[in-house]
Length: 279
Image 1 (tube, rainbow, N blue to C red):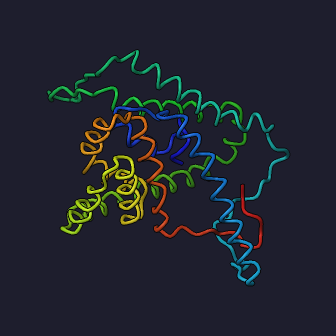
Image 2: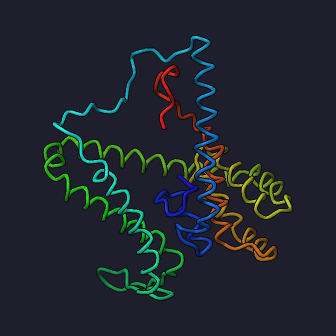
Image 3: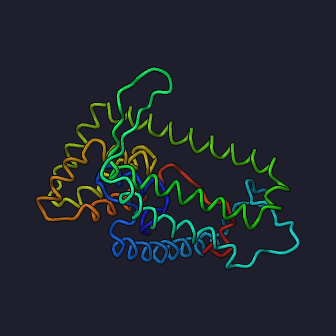
């Protein structure tokens, strides 16, 4: 979600707009973190599964929200199934490089459809990562439509309902998390917490603890990171410059730290604990 460089997740995009980086920031650090997380995480989950199975714990048989069973004649070739994912990654990288070359340092446009309005000036370094991800995801969608047009068309109506429902749920959840985070940031206690966290001397440890603590308070990785960076990004940047730390490292640490204590949002595993952990 947030460790691997180039991932199109919002947790990997938010720091780019504040630090002037992109989704591929600190590739070596991100790759090491991306390898470390599944090894340690799945080892822990497997240990807990075995403990629960030994204790006779279970989730029952009346499970809900299970994936729909495959009803087609044959599955797509594995390479063809992976093609949209690979296309998103490659396109994200290429667009990350091309967009600053095409637009330069800033982009100006008139937002008014009727009448006049002040000209909008966008700093490309702060929006290039967002544009690159959006373009890459659109290409991935077009790839799926190109190679799976018949299956998509056959279930288009029902699939559209599911897609719209999922999009609305994600939008409302994100909006409510941001709103809840804004309320938290306005409370007097938040200033006490922020002041205490700012006392941590090491810039990277300070950023990591601040982001993951606020992600835990808000129950949201994106919400906690947004609050932390909106309130303290200038402090993080100043401390990083003083210590000679690149902005790319600051980006990756913030992204990875956001995915720690956000699990307090109480997401639950739905499969039986005595079944092997999913890879």
